[in-house]
Amino acid sequence: MDQRFTIGEMAKLHNIPVKTLRYYDDIDLFKPIEVDPNTNYRYYSIEQFEHLNTINYLRELGITLKEIKQQFNVRDRQMFYDMLARQEARVEQEIKHLKRAKKRLNNRQRELLCQYDDCGKPKVQTVHKRRIAQLKQPIRSHAELELSLKQLEKRSGLNASIFIGGVGVSRSVETLPKQVYNSIFLMLEDEDIDCELETIMPEREYATLLVNRERIHPKDYEPLLHLIDKNKLIVDGDAIERTIIDRYITSNQKEHLSEIQVPVLT
Image 1 (tube, one colour):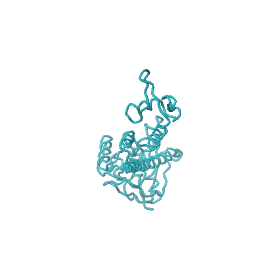
Image 2 (spheres, rainbow, N blue to C red; image 1 turned 45 degrees about the horizontal axis):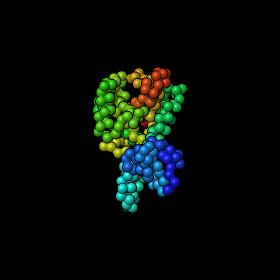
Image 3 (tube, rainbow, N blue to C red; image 1 turned 90 degrees about the vertical axis):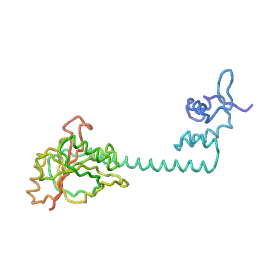
Image 4 (spheres, rainbow, N blue to C red; image 1 turned 180 degrees about the vertical axis):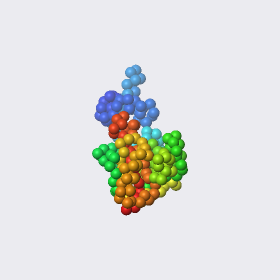
């Protein structure tokens, strides 16, 4: 008789759990060559090693057990090729997803390292071009803000939850001190995202201010307006407000952070 291996020996040789071999048996993917009728012990042969190696190879590539079983049932070269091609397409999609996640992670980490010493100190700086999905409509309360965000999410086909830290609102400086916004937007960090509400914020000069609080108050504009007036700058468009660090990131209110950007002409 050919050498036989118990399920434990087979699992150890191939570095897989015993319960995995039992499951493969239950779904008729990889069955033992012999089962002792008295003890129900499973036994495997050396001839089955390559079969299991192939399963492990395909599983390592991320191919589903259902697809692997179909392949072993048919054993067709074209079917095998198509199976690999489908998995390659899934891998490519996952790579894109991971690259997006990495970019978002890097952006958020960079913002979380903001210098709090800069809070309350207005300055003029050049801000690079930004792509946004923007919904223009009056927003007069926090409730309207949340509803507008959901409308933006629906109309743009984007999930706002993946844009934490990238949600902003715009307002006319002329409406101060009223707390009225005229749009809500999402920063589009991913180059391959397209939506009907997409627009571009061109590179330009902004009077900017970091504020050590979760939400911007109209009075927070005072240092910015003073800087603009002192340097004879001209407000040239809507101001932008964005929360960077809020209560869901830290319970320490001293670490909350928001930003105001007012486009200006020098």
